[in-house]
Structure formats: structure tokens, C-alpha cells
Amino acid sequence: MPQLTVDCLDEIFEHLADDEFTLRSCILVNRLWCKVSVKILWRNAWNYNFSDFRTLIACLPSESKKILSNNRIMISTPTLEIPTFDYASFCKILPVKRTYKMLELLIGKQIGNHSISPQNLFIKAHITTQEVFKMFMNQITSLKILDYLHYQEIGFTSYPGARNCLKYLSELYCSSDTSSDFFYQLSQICNNISLLDITIVDRLPHGLINLISVQQSLKCLNLSIYYVPTDLSLLLTRVPNTLTKLRLYGGSDGISLSFIIRLTNLQELQLSYEVKEWFKDFEILQYTIFPKLQVLKFKFELPNWELLVKFLEHNGKNLEEIYFCDYSMGYNNNSLNLSIARYCPILKNLSTGIESNELETLKIIVESCHNLKSIKVWCGGSFINEKDALEVILEYSKNIDEIILYYHYDAQIEIFPEELDSIFINWSNHIPQKSISLILITDTCIVSSLDKNQKNLEIIEKYIDLGIIKKFEITDYEDLEYI
Image (cartoon, rainbow, N blue to C red; front, side, top):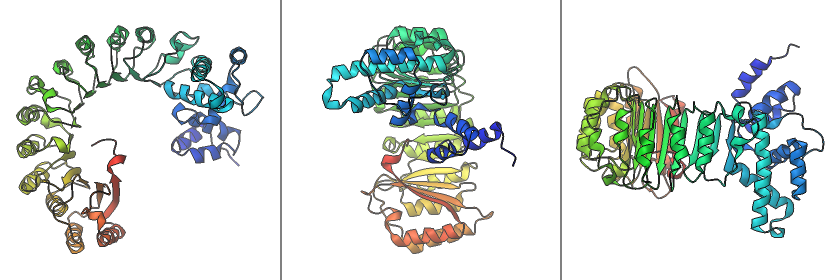
């Protein structure tokens, strides 16, 4: 019987990358299947369990095992024999803090947490982590993602093999409470990081500024700023114009947006400010043209609506996605929504608030934005109710195939089953006929959302069976990753 080649198995098993149970079953088929499965299973160290970390200990070279033994660090391993594979060599995604924590827990379980002082446990975990990282640096030929957030440092950048391991690093997650030396050493090795995620919590190491300065192909920069150091502007001026995505979270005042003006290659801009006044210098962006900008997101507050309208006037023609958060609405949002209809003709995805007395605005948006595929509107309070939202969107849209109703408040008017049935009957007569996804974002505190009526759910089930609704989903607020 002919056997599948390694390339074929690689391609097939990649589709099982998120199905750990099936991949572990594939290990038992034969040696070839085992090898291909193991490479995928061991790629992401975030997924390692206690058994995997015991296997890593078994893989340590003799000199590392001797160091552990000399420090009275005894960790039981699955086998006394040499492991089948160099498991560490398969790792492509390495979280430093989680690796330390798992090893600390493993040592604590082995010895007994009540039999060792916290300080002694820390020392043993630190020594073990050092030896494990020596093995990682020596065996990994091309690490792709390094998570170095908030960790008591291990200077693995100077370990044998670190240059080869880190040379092609593409994503780095780090924080400003890391030593400047670590970043300086990394800047000598990594010049082609494509995604840099930085959390600034106190001082700003000059080595981090240097690391940004030497990047030749940085595409995505995520900045979470909880403290504004005096030299923050120096870091921001070093951000290269290769950037296509900028996500800025401002946890405090004093962050100037002037550095954004020169980032003319931006395709996505996300500004997450919790206080409206922190947008005080957004006016410097209102006339700036970003010719490639496709995605605009505001997770919390919005700038002054007049400035934002001006920004859309100059940049709306290429925008495909706009996300406004609900508790930033209410500041002349009708004018802002009308500017979306006027200046954003190729928009595909929209998240915004529509006041209950502004149904005409919603109609104008869905009629003007011919390419609109997905729309999220808030229901309840001063916002539109679910009945009006569904009627207007389904009657006047041309290409929308996903409607998201975000129940931030109780809906003013509960939709009745006969009304819901009528809405979907009209949609089923839409030419050309097409199915739609309906997603509800709510929680148990909302008592009048569509899903609270069992007969409504039965109506939806009927239209799922008829193929009019292709997907129906109820999502809790707490499960949301983004607005």
C-alpha cells in the first residue's frame, strides 16, 4: 500500500494544528506520522503541559543535568533513555515567563510546596530555566516568536547558538522593565522583526530605542503605554516608515501623535485612549493623508468628532474597516456616521452606534456603502432597537451578509416572533437570494434581547433549515477580544 510523503502529511497535519487530541493520536500510527505530528505539537511552547516539560528535562545534555543534580534539583522524567527526538529543536514560539512558571510549578510539585521556601524555589526554578534555555538556544535553528513580557531576566542572548536561533525572529513581545543590555544584544542579532509588541510600565531602556532603530522591515507596532517616560518621544521618532499597522494604547496623558504623520505606509491605525482629552493633538492628523490606510479603529474614546470627520474626508476613500466603540458615541455621532456614508465608498466592515431617532442615517449608510459586508450596531438605551436595525439593514443593503447586534443596554422595544418571521420572509425574497449570518453580543443582564424569547429562537432555527440564515451565534461580552 503506497505511503503518503512527508510533504503531504505536513500539509494535512497543518490543518490539525489546533486539534491537539487528534495530533497526539496520529503519533501512534507509525514513525513517519509520529515525526510529522510531533513537530507541530512541539512548535508552540504555550501549549506545553507538565509531561512535555518533563520530557524537556530528559532532553537536557549531560552537563546541564549535572548542574541540576549539584543544586539538588530532581525532576522525574518520562524515560531514563535518550528521548526519540530533539524536541526542543521543534519550538518556534517561546514564552519565557510561562516556561519559568511551569518549571517552578513542576519543581514545587516534585519537592512539595510546603517543603521548600519561596526563595529556594525561585533559585531552583531560575537555574533550571537557564539550562532549558541553553538547550533551546543550541537546538532551535529559527525561532519565530519570542514572548519576553515581565520576566526576571535570563541572559540567553549570550548562550551558544543564540545568534542562529534568534537571527530570523519575526515577532517580539516585551516590556520596558527589561534590562537595556538584553535589547542591545538583541539588536546585534535581530534586524528583521516584523511585529514588535511593547508594554511601557516604567523607565524606557535605551537598548529598546536602539532595537527599534535597527529594524529594516518592521510592519506592526503595538504600544501599550502605562507610564510616559521623558524620552518616549525619542523612541517614537525612531519608528520606521516601513510600518503598516500601528496599535497604540494610551493608559496616561502626554503621548504625542505627531510621529504618526510620517508613517505614510500605514494600512491599519488603532488608537485606544480611555480619556477623550488625550486626543488633544489629533488635530495634527486631520489633514494628513495616509494613501494606503484601510482599517481605522477606536477601542475606547473618540477624538473630537469635527476633527474625525476631516480625517475621514481626507482618508475615507480607501477605508475598508471602521470600528467605533459604543461608549465613545453620543458626541454628534450622527454627523460622524453621515461622513462615513459620504467619504467611505468601499467600506466592507463597520461597527458604530446609531441613535434610535436616526434610522434614516442607517439607511443612507447601507445604501451608500455598496461593498458593506458586515455591520455591527448597538441596541438598547438611546441606540436603535433590534427590530428597526434588522428591517432597515435587510431592506436597503446590497451585499451585507453579516449583522451583529451588540446589546449594550436593554432594547427599548422587544421584537416579537411574528415580526421576526416577517423580516426574514422579506429577506428570503431578496434578489439575488443570499443567506446571512446573525450574531448577538449580549449577557445575562440583558433581559429583552432577541434570544431571550424562545419562539424567536424557533423562528431563527426555521430559517437556518431553509438556508436563509447561514450562521447564528450568541456571544457573551466576556468572550470578546475586541469591540
